[in-house]
Image (cartoon, rainbow, N blue to C red; front, side):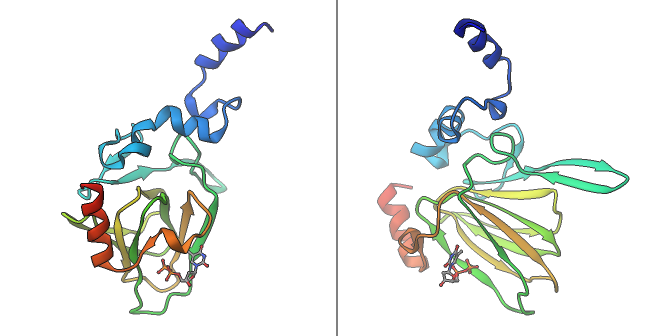
Amino acid sequence: MNSRLKLGARSAVPLGMRRDLSPAELFDREYPAARKAPHLAPVPSYARPLDVRRAMEVDLSVIRDQRGDLVVAELGKHLPFVARRMYSLVRVPEGEARGGHAHKELEQLLFVLHGALDLVLDDGVTQQRVRLDDPEKAIYLRPMVWRELEHFAPGTVCVVLASEVYDESDYLRSYDAYRDELAALGW
Ligand code: TYD
């Protein structure tokens, strides 16, 4: 196949399916604005913006048959970043809360595989509480969103996909430090 034909075929394939682009290139093509100014980034078709302006609710794909439901989160379709880390929150004792921080650069996709929890989001202006209780719904958090997770139902399994490996220097662990960083960014 000559290169012109190959290019033509490429453009007919949905963005997330372009195997010949690296994940970083995929991201740069679809979300250039998100990298420079997350608060101004366009909302992709598969997501709804939440009141906290940098967060979105994402419908994951579900393939149902008689054997059960298969839920998919895929790069370019539901996941606007390359996941370099996964962590989960499990066996959270009743009454315990998690989170209580923001990230300077990290992006995350958060969902509850089983059970339920309240995700409390804050962008320095607006606060919003979202009950996560459906494995088909995910929350996409851009950088600089303050989050707390509370009211875990017993047995809840919360999964987080993160755009970077663990880096403590990316954390803003006090709300004052978070507000200062927002001010420094002019947000
Ligand atoms: P913490 O930020 O308090 O968890 P949460 O966001 O759920 O409230 O993290 C608890 C500890 O685990 C802290 O010492 C940092 C460490 N940690 C890692 O080593 N790797 C990771 O990927 C994460 C998320 C945390």
